[in-house]
Amino acid sequence: MLTTPMKNHHHNGPIHPVSPNSTNVIHETIAARAYEMWEEHGKPDGEADAHWLAAEREQVTGHQESEPVKPLPVSF
Image 1 (cartoon, rainbow, N blue to C red):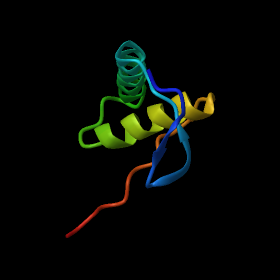
Image 2: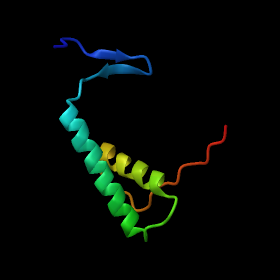
Image 3: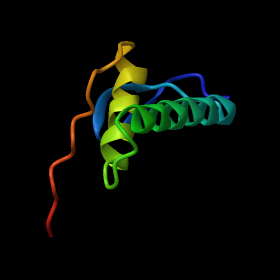
């Protein structure tokens, strides 16, 4: 078992190991909230990413958003 927190080269703080079960619960919670938001907004096409990101933000911040923020288009 790890005794010291791992470091992430993209983040300066420690990374605490997450059990696979808690990861599944978080994913399912976000998925359910994103689906609920999609239904609340009239089941619009092409906005799945916006609803998913809004649901993630709610999970992290602990407060609900009234409208999802649409992601900016990306071109390569």
